[in-house]
Image 1: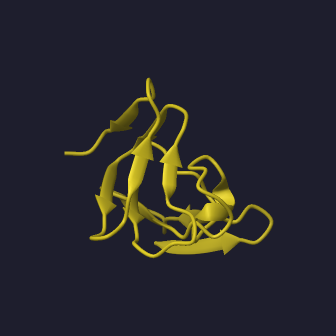
Image 2: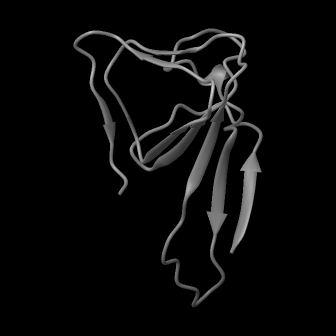
Length: 99
């Protein structure tokens, strides 16, 4: 398997060798909070992508803007590091699809 990041898309592109079988592929994101508290702003992540139901998310302590989820959201797993905070607005649903 070869993983490349296309600068124009800022997303990984996976290529499998002929005959190869991919069983499991995981993507993880680290929230930096560099721009704002907005969960839906891709600039707040190390790879510039908003997580979805297939993405493992790590929320670190000490970010300049603590995480606020103001609209329905999903991730595969979420790990909130000691000292970090996650605020979920009233009426908003965070769906965690992993086990």
